[in-house]
Image (tube, rainbow, N blue to C red; front, top):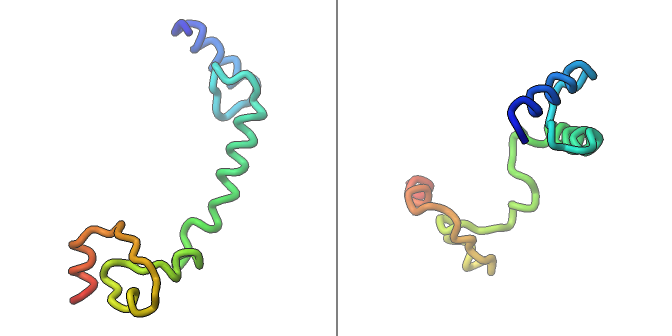
Length: 86
């Protein structure tokens, strides 16, 4: 898309009252649906504790994992395991 066409489309979107303009997106409802879904996640993004689905996943720094029969995830950097052991 040429720059002039992009700028003209973006300005037309602003004239239509759009707060976000995506000149190449054919249907503005697609953006609105995405944005509504994104905003619906907000209440769960800054909670005090990790989600319940993470409660039974052992970390390499969790020596009780093997005893409990839980698999270690292996995703944690060794320096975090060292810090947790202190």
